[in-house]
Image (cartoon, rainbow, N blue to C red; front, side):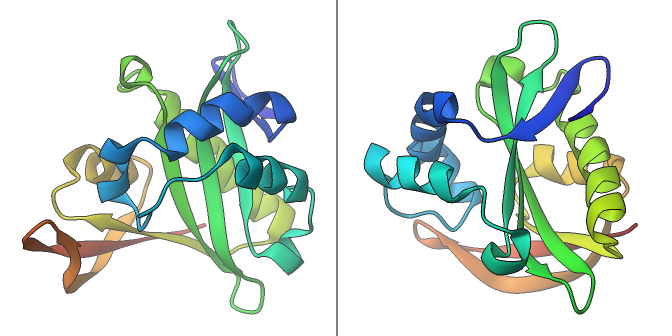
Length: 172
């Protein structure tokens, strides 16, 4: 278990299905990801069951962010596009309920997650793509030690507008 005094990162469990279903199917959050269709409970149950696959075969790892005091799931820390040859991986984070945001949970999760992937997989770097208009995420990743390394011009369409996407990297 990876933890500090406020949160712990743990594996997905069948009991996380309701949060996973609710948060993955929140249409308002889709603009910050490449997600475009809802997931059924059946598909998400299969996903949870497959979460025990080796990161070397699945190339991804989703960890639950759990508040230590209440033991409730407050979000997910996702590692994906694992590249063991080049020792890098993409990272994304979601704090599910708006009322749990801006309380330090996300920065704690990123800090713990960075340490975990460095120690467990000897990673050299993490990276992420963030839409230019997602100011809270830009601020979070900068606080977590990520630096802007590039801009993908007109990378994402939001309605009738095209958005640039910022590329962030963190050397571990």
